Image (cartoon, rainbow, N blue to C red; front, side):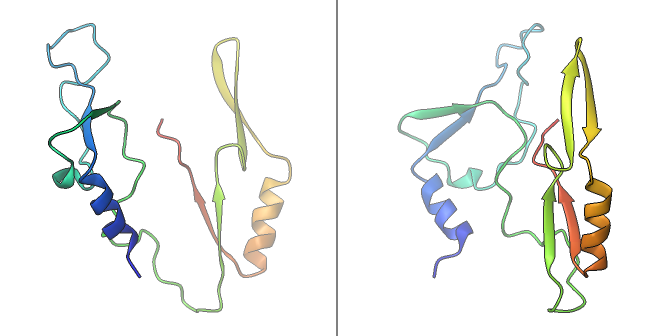
Amino acid sequence: RLRASAIRSKMLQYMRFRPLLNIEADPDSILPEQDPYERYGAEHFAQDGSTIWFEPLPPMLPNLEKNPKLPPLASSEVYTLVLDLDETLVHYFELDGMGSYEIRPGMYDFIQRMHALGYEVVIFTAATQ
């Protein structure tokens, strides 16, 4: 069985990714002059072929060879409940140009009940800003 990181690195060798950059140092450009992020597998990117341009946002694909962010569980009997912050636990909205958020009804009670049942509760967000 192949690991996800092995499959991903094989796919990358056929793709020529290049970040959209401000190579002319235009002071009005919103693009950075160089990619501010280390790209997983960048050493495997193809050097020829059609270019796939991307805006240099934070990487969405994790480096699967790094250590996990969570500590090991104390018991294999414990389940982990992973909850997305955005639009699951809180609702973000804009009103008259001002950003705000509201906590979902029952959110505190739900998390407390899951904790009382013995779940390890992990809250994450995929948001980049």
